Length: 114
Image 1 (tube, rainbow, N blue to C red):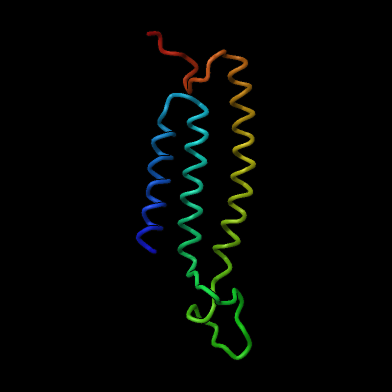
Image 2 (image 1 turned 45 degrees about the vertical axis):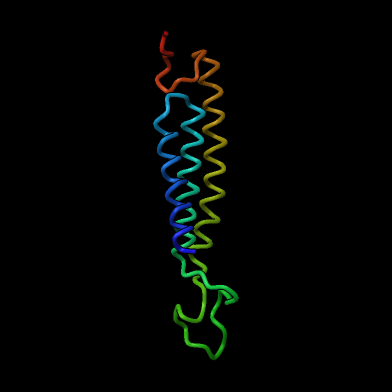
C-alpha cells in the first residue's frame, strides 16, 4: 500500500510540474492544483494513519503515537484544501480578466506565430 501511495504522489507531482511548465495559463492553474493535491496527500499520509483507531487519546491508554492517530495533519490538509480552492478560484478570475485584456491565454501574453 505504501508503494502505491508513493507512486500516486509521484505521478501527481510530476504531472503538476509538467503542467506548470506549459505555455497556457489554464494548464498552469491545473498544474498548481495537481501539485497542491500531491502535497496534501503527502502530508495526510505522513500523519501516522491507523485503521480503526480513534483520533483522540482514550482514558487509560498511554498517550503515544502507537495508540492513536495524530489529528494535526488531517486538520492541516483540510485547511489546505479550503485555501487551495479559494486560490484556484482567484487564479481563474485573473486568468479570465487577462484573457479579456490581452486576447490570448499564453503565460507571457504573446502567442507564437507559426
